[in-house]
Length: 237
Image (tube, rainbow, N blue to C red; front, side, top):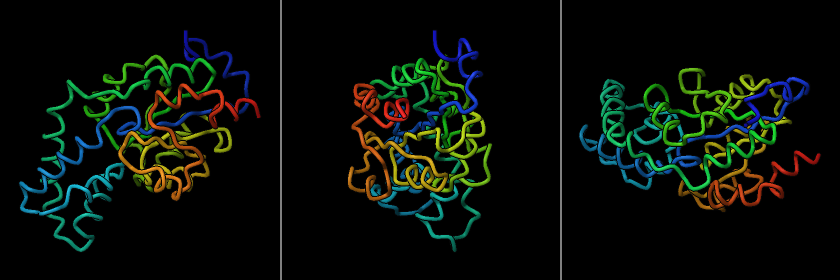
């Protein structure tokens, strides 16, 4: 039984705790799949973009990603074709998206400790459904905020703020878990502490410089250290 099988415990607290999770690279090992799919989409449209540059933009919404990689002054007429190509290529992986070790167990462990679990992701529609199937922990997830629910994507704070609204939780009672500097920046701008994971391929130094309050290898490592992590410390505060 999880915290969401019985909401009476949370209802007694005027300030429930919320654990907000990014998905790509944080719970599911997809950042490099996105990089490859974007590279192929660019190639199909005649753009030469380095794979390393693409990787460092994963985590942004598609509009921000294209602005950063192709420039804001580009001809925007090709954006729809690029987005469609990326979505089509990425969809070929939907039935084999690799969940990261410990992802589902981490969500359930936090839910059992009365944390409200909300996903905050740029994924939407069938992509978000495929990611949730891969994670396999819908019993622990209270809600999910997608690109459809906000005006601006990460690194804007909008996705994190919407997740807090969904959880009915103030920033000081929440933590965000992500894997990119864009996740850390979005959390910081929403005044939420960010626990970062290395599973998205971004280095510890970059994440700490961006403002991560703790860094772990992957969800399994965070789960193993949960009592001594920022989650455990907030529970004892």
